[in-house]
Image (cartoon, helix red, strand yellow):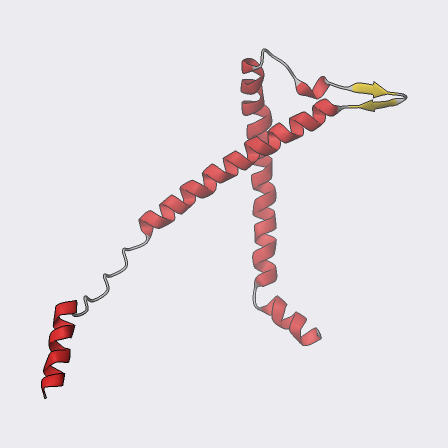
Length: 123
C-alpha cells in the first residue's frame, strides 16, 4: 500500500489536484463577486427591489430565514449558468484550434468489389 501511495504521489496526480483546487477557489471568489455585486442587483431591479435575504418566518422561538435559502438557490443557478457558458466557450475555442482529421482513404466502390469477385469466380 505504501508503494502504491508513493506511485500515486509521484505521478503528479496530487499536484494536478492541488492546482485545480487553488484555481477553483480563486474562480469561486470571482464568480461569487459577479453574482453578488452585478447579477443580484440586476435581478433586484427586475423584481422591484425585492431582496429575498430578508424574508423569514418565526415558528415558536426559532426563526426560519427561508429568504437566505432562496438567495442561495438563485446564486447557485447563476453560478452554474456562468460556469456552463465558460466551459461552452472553452470547448468552442478548443474545437476551433484542433486541426481537421484527415479524410479516410476511399475504399473500392460496390461495383468494383463485385467486378473483382466476378473476375475471381471466372478464374
